[in-house]
Image 1 (spheres, one colour):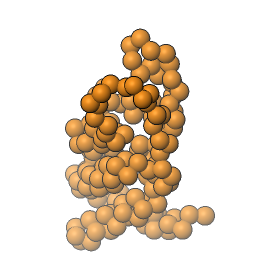
Image 2 (cartoon, rainbow, N blue to C red):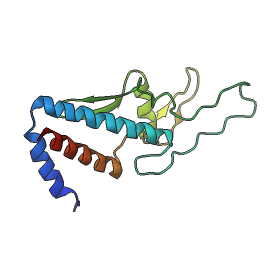
Image 3 (cartoon, rainbow, N blue to C red):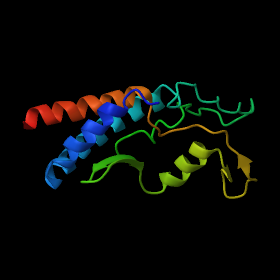
Length: 151
């Protein structure tokens, strides 16, 4: 049984009593905090359960000279591509635009062509988005603080 079940039931009742605008504001605050934690976790190259991502495949020695090597998903974790939004019924953190395809391939470990004329490659599963136990605790704290401030 979930240790947080009684608290979750009470929080659900208190959140239900909020106005739609209040719920939307609370959801936006939760989404921003989740985006921040997702960005930090992606920067650390770890999945939500704390397991490090599988390393990139080694490139050939005679690769392009002067090539800049960057950490995986450095651009994906920026606010430009990783959006947070709150609605009265949900807090959403998602990738937007064309990067959704890249994120989906890595999130689920799908097959894709890395280039126009290349063969299909099976990518290892690297969970970019997900909720950890720490995130759940943070969400509960945000809700409790919000309810305390409004009463």
